[in-house]
Image (cartoon, rainbow, N blue to C red; front, side, top):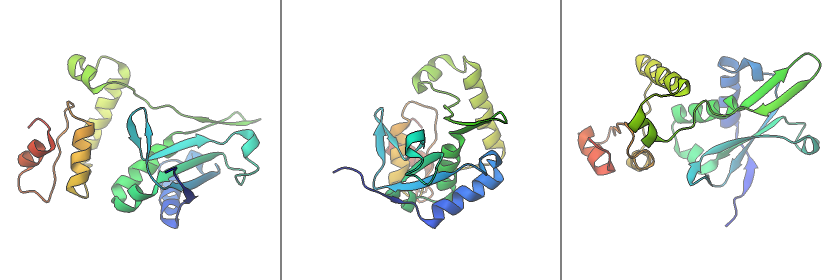
Length: 189
């Protein structure tokens, strides 16, 4: 069945407005339309919970003069905790690139900072400056004690399956032993 679409609810808009105010002030004048998609998409064999798209010039009239569209998977938004929602919207807002040279404002999709295979990193370590910057960001998050709690065992198992072979630890609070949880998830303990 094809995906269906609807406007995002006030919770998505409030989350985006808060993050724009706190983290992305450069987007305060950018017009972004938020939508719900009835299901996540598959992109390159991976689940896409959201996506940011630049609005083409010929479509701006139809889309409230929007500069970007961000769609979010409705079932995932409704089932996840606020920390996950914040991370998802922050990620999508980071894709919104704006260049303003004074005469003309140009909008573009900002690419990810890093694209690499977990297995290559496992074999060769942080061999590029982009991977080294990612290592630093991860260490900063750990130092700030930023943690991501899975809402249920299914989320933990899905994450473990998606990252198998990488150096991730899955901890599920409903289990008494995180080692037991990792073994059940198929992650090396």
